[in-house]
Length: 332
Image (cartoon, rainbow, N blue to C red; front, side, top):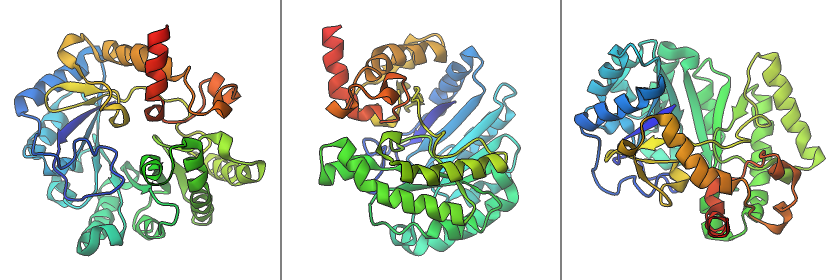
């Protein structure tokens, strides 16, 4: 799946935002002409899945037109909308179409304030409209954050899957420069979160920014195994153990038709999609200029001979390896 970064505008100011290079840094958004060019590019090698991201995509000036455009395109099989859920009610009539699925990133009442009741109402309605095609998500960004609200929101849906992400970069910025120390700092929160997921029969999974398996003790691993067994019994293929082990290029296309490998590496490299024939060519470019070096790099001396790293199942975000990547590029 390739994502279209529709707009920089957002109606929230989250401290942990992964796209802080762009979000609310101006009003730049896709023109309809560039939207059509981006969609044509995405379809060049048969890619039939598109993600709509931001900023907050529902604030995009031509959001309604883009929904119709994608829904009417027979070569597009599925469209995923990544939203904070606050304005999605304006588009209920359109997104009820089979092609659309949603990932609603749910912020806490403390962060959203008086708008929180709107989120609750919209999630309840989305549960009716989309069922399991509406997945809730949460970002765990502080070692002492209160995440209990997410289970209350999940009770409004029939979906037992929860997407989570660990916002490590903010922890590093504020507390430490050592990524493994930062991971261990967040581990108690995550283990408590896993236990609460198990009690509520919720299957958590991560598609980005998870903690590496190496930080868990044998005792810690018991809860991960329990969650994995619960997932198998429910016929689900997501669980913390199986989440985000090997990282591959995401491909986010910006309004100016430049593409980034992912938001984490957006400040490091941007390339014009017009210089590539297909998405596969572009993905190969990022793999050959970033991934191949990232897999050889490590964030700590402890990682040098780690088996998980050597078999490319580390899980550490490549964002933390930029300096090592550059060193390797200069050597090789």
